[in-house]
Image (cartoon, rainbow, N blue to C red; front, side):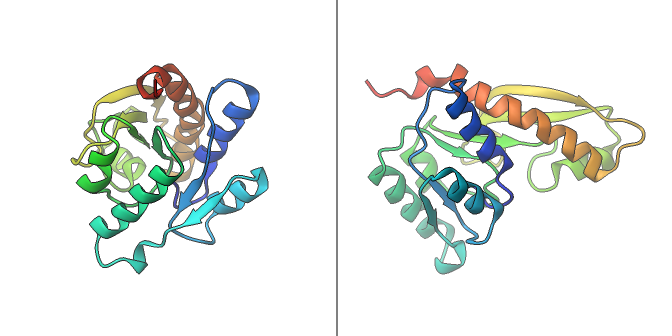
Length: 186
């Protein structure tokens, strides 16, 4: 699932293609038809479903549609790779312990939107990224892995975000591979 540029999605695809991640990607779901993630999926020949959140009366209805899509494609694990929507119990309960998110902070610090900006505003000396299981509480599920990134005195939002994202591209595919045993269907 992605909403934006899709660089984390591409990192997953490249890890699969190189053999570093033993997985299949049956589809990418985006909520913005013109997002970069959609274009990347097209380039890699991966099926894309556009599920525009604006077409649904509430988050639960959106999540019911997502559950149906994932079940119809026999998805074992759902990866939120830049999905900029809060999910509900409908999706969380349909994929318990099988819904994974990458977040640009060292959780539990700086949950929610603009974690990089929050870290800069707080004046921390270390930031980073976290891969975690999604629960009903925003950015509060069990942590699977983290990578630290120093905050430099010269950093601005763009420079810190770029370094955090480089770590995300390494951490997310590696964490998926390390935890693959959790999601394999017997």
